Image 1: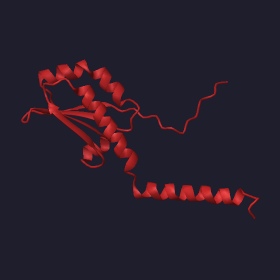
Image 2 (image 1 turned 135 degrees about the vertical axis):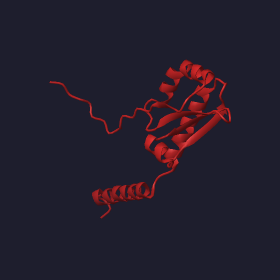
Image 3 (image 1 turned 90 degrees about the horizontal axis):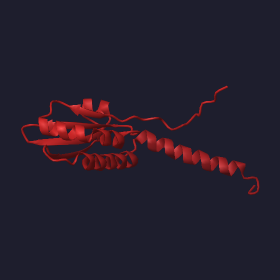
Image 4 (image 1 turned 180 degrees about the vertical axis):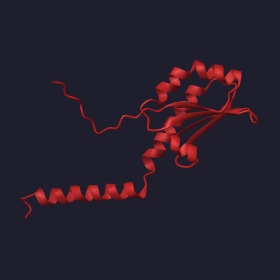
Length: 134
């Protein structure tokens, strides 16, 4: 008989998504650092988006959930760099750290209420189970 390990932690798989067309130099640099970018975003609840703006000569590296990126809303961390520089890994690390901090400290009202009642319930149970005080 085989027993499967059950975990309450969700399994996330962040992706690296290239948005639009890229010129030759950024494409070459992205291919060079593709495996490292995939490792950076792996097990994250959001994706890493790379987009080139040909008119401004920049590449935008952003971290955001895919549905929020499509709807242009939600929490997002962005770094812009010149399109001929090889700093994709550094930018991705920075964006991922920033996004993790934003997700950690930006709770919705529902999450705050849930946390409050969880703490209140825990304190109430501790009081009810303490037989020595009564």
